[in-house]
Length: 331
Figure 1 (cartoon, rainbow, N blue to C red):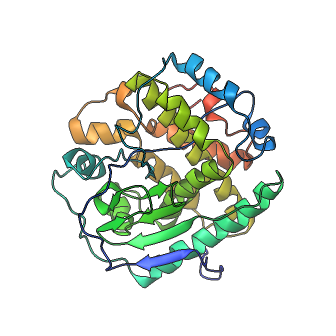
Figure 2: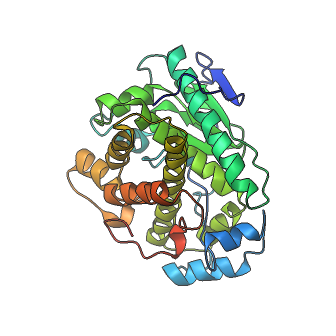
Figure 3: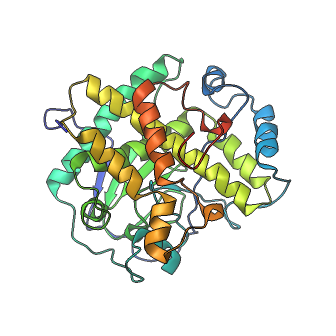
């Protein structure tokens, strides 16, 4: 990616070497967007915090969920995390999903370099330009996310304790993206997804969760999962949440290409990263088998398909994952 001449975002906090330690804090789970009546565009036109009474009904009908049940396992603090990992409190399960070849915490894999931080700052700046222009078309003034670059552990502003072992994540409570850049090396070495645009996809995916927060449908999603008893149904909702973030990442990739920022092979790097963090791929690597009802992010093919759909259309209207019949291969 041709990023060196891009402006750097001012919304980056470098907290490397300022680990918060493994103190208290609630467990972390994803939070995000729910679907709605009609297209995503109609929800956008309703404005932030629009009237979503019918949205919840549609979601409950879609997934057969009943009333009651808590998505957050008894806590109100939630995060939407990396493009590939279910994140609870730092424990063996979270660590195993982040590192299918190890059951131990490998958070201290080397500090991020200044070049890596500058790269993410440039990518973030590009996403800010894109989404600022895109959301203005819907009379929404974009308020960019903060990017927190940290090492090992970091206390969030309302989503508990962030752990490098569980990968990048988005915290809607403080509208911030948290990344320990040891994950940058994991993509290349552990998941065979090398290249700077693979990491650009990761950041663009997390920004996609912030867009879900910005356009005012995240609360509707949370209400829907809170009223769904079935864990399998909640997982399906979360898959759709994550696939939409992949779609938004692809939409930004189209913008980056139109700006002349992409090198040959960049889209392939993003596609390889999307494949590497698919639920089926991670489960097969970690456990030698696949359990579809436990998927929380989507299959590798689904993730690639929705990224490419965003890359194809570059808009909001075609990104309504909640009212689209999903197949294992995509949509």
